[in-house]
Amino acid sequence: MNTISLTILFGLIFSFASSSQSLKVAKIIVDKSNKQPLEYVNIYNEKDNSVSNTDGLFIFVSDKKEINFNLLGYIPIETTFERIEKQDTIFMQPKIFELKDVVVTNVDPFIKKALDKWSGNLISNYTSNFFLRNVLRSDSVIVKLQDIYGKKNKNYAQKENTKIEILNMRKIGLFEKKNRIDLIFPDFNEFFSPPFFIIDKCTFSDVDYKDVDYRKVLFESKEKDGWGQIVKGYFIINRNDYAIVEYYITMYDNPEAVPYKKILLSGTQYRTIKYSRLMHFTKSVVLNKYYLSNSKLDSEVEVLADTRIEKTFYYNLTMYYFATNDPTNEIINSNFPVDKDIFKVKFPFSEKFWNNQNQLPLTNELEDFLKKVSENRDKKKEYEIIGNF
Image 1: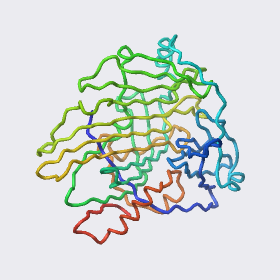
Image 2: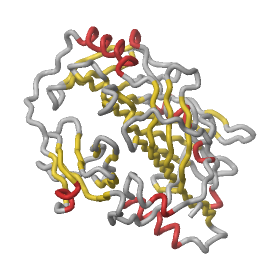
Image 3: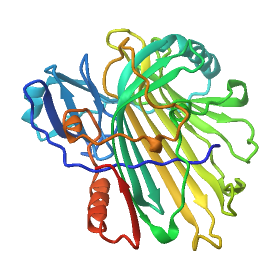
């Protein structure tokens, strides 16, 4: 596996007022039966997309009055901005289903057909606007935050099939100088090219799923890899067109067996002890094929204590991505290399730009981090603060 990269986010208090050109709403979405917040709910209409965060919060901006909510296993909601404005909370009703025993027959032919159809089910060449949030934690404490808004062109017919145009960026980081460690962040190529299993080297099993229109298939590698790990994951597949709508993979089931590596020009040792990817694919309203609508990377690196570092550190990187509009055929002006550390993005911050974009709201944890940065801005001997706003 590659080393971990991290990012930063800044925190603004977002304005939720409507403008003359677009409508804007910010609410929370919960499960109607247990009142728990719902993450990864798709909020969309024929033009714009958004998604809810871990607290169930979302921001949705559009010049269309329609607004829809969709999450696998729940009854979809079709409504309007006007109706939503009258509600403090959006309640989604789980679909009713009966649990059955695990079924292990006829799995291989089904998954093989879905994988054979995967490339054909995807849009081969498209452009979409995107929002990317990166959060780096050191021993569970946030130290870097970054939000990027841009355009992505994906063209599977080309060898270099991803192009990126950055439109704006905001970031901030807070580090204790005595324990400063430089980490390598992923690039866009790495983020958009997640690890994949080899079908002949995996076993598959069918499990109950809460939506009868979809089938959930688990996979697991038959043998351990070179680092002594078993690769595991699952697919959620549309029964009608065999489209993969959700893909999850985790690479480390026995992190203690992973060998350490040395950082170049240093005696410091590290190893990756966690790596997982979750990807959702949505059917385009116009093109009637699927595209990557949102994705999450979660990884963790252990850095051993040495003569320079007084204790062992555990760095966790999470990256949240979602497409903010239905795919188009727009030609973009690529302005950032896809093979360059994402945290190297340098753009002046524009509050005006961000006030009218679909984005993830700040969680309570991120709000607390921003307060901490503000409280320690003058402690330059103890802390290093970086940012663009």
